[in-house]
Length: 147
Image (cartoon, rainbow, N blue to C red):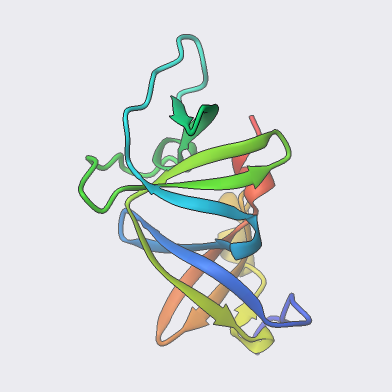
């Protein structure tokens, strides 16, 4: 028996890769996706804060999701991107290994996180989606970016 769907309408997501896993965030929270650029480190910040970037004259903090989620840190590649998202604290950049695609999910493709996984770490997870045989972890951006 599957868990009840958690959405009432279709949802558009930006799907990205961290390590070998796929994650999705609401497209309406995404301002832009940029190539990796020089990030200025900030002393005495959390280990997941990679630093600051200058984006058209605005200084934006950048979060390394590998460190935030305790995932193996990967080396930056030509596919590495910064996704600039709207958060409760304003615009924030998140470093991801690769932006894969934009998808639309139907209500029946999304389920709550299974209980066994929930006990491990659902602080940042709001559900799991299934599409074309792959699982996509749906992030709760506000919780993922909160200090």
